[in-house]
Image (cartoon, rainbow, N blue to C red):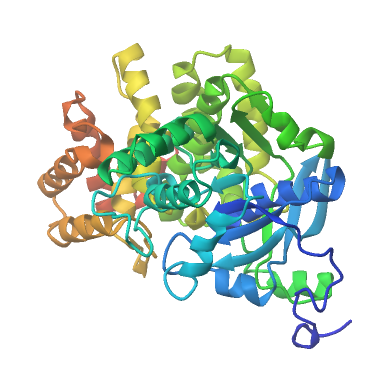
Length: 497
């Protein structure tokens, strides 16, 4: 067997692949999830349903992976590990549908803009994190490019409208994958807002409304991402170098709320994919976001501060595992409208997926933009629980307190690589720099965080008892440590000598 440094780099010269497909998909986002979920499915449709579709990936931020993606000619390996048909299974495939990546923040901008003139272009997909579908009032039509993803999309669609003279057949199907409620509706609303702000005219607005289809969607696959801890072993097994390997679980589900004719244009059923085109995706979304994503976001700061690095370690740990199970069964499921038995079956599946023996799903990979994630995934359960029970959900409140401590950026003297909006990081940095370690200090910090309506959509200090309980946990975690505090909360503490 060759040594890793002797292996050929994966690209279209070293690897026999099909010729590039015509570009019919514009994708905003080059991260692990889109590549292991959406592009993996598009590749399946090309290979099994003769879809003949290429994808151009646009880097949504100045920093990203498209340079590395282009070095590999758009090729990369998806490794799926987990339970399939009741059996533990590991398999891999080289995804070939990506034709190239574009960084619009520089010399690639003209190439990016020229894509609007491609008559065969039909789809737009995106995943720019929950914070990505947001209005940036400073965006202008003349920017190269606009700061926000909706701003980029509005300008791109206007260029397409102009080039084709408002041809109704040149509209696009837009399927955002960001994990916010009714993501397609939210994206369309902001695009229309830019059309009005930039005074693009009634004809363009009518074309937006009548010729383009904005779909709400729900995505479901756990994607741990790049397997940094075993990449040399994997590359040796593959027999080539791939700097963009992405690992995901076997399970996948894509629910798209859209017109039934979309089944003909997106032939997922012919490739055996778990894609549902439905009239109402609300029940699927609520179940998934609250249970699977909610559990992920709730456990991340607790487990990491406890000293556990992966989701698997957390669910297998006696204390953390019980914490997660009770959070789901006692505090999330009771707030949902679907039949309890059905929700418990789904929860069983989620825990099994968390336990995936193949995957090291690092909790830090879930921690990106944790504040907006908590608002989307966990706050609705907390609010509904309070409304129904007239009490606070203890585990969710503890996870909220743990989130605040997580943003202190310290795990037992080790710096935490925090990743969030600059305003979130600067606010926490300032607040924690003033924290004096007292309960009064914890109360002050907590009240200021919970009162930030721009983060939570409301003043959380107005929820009876929440600020006091959260502050008490913040004080205990910072003074006693996460392990002793959680052990005490769950009744597993060992008395001090």
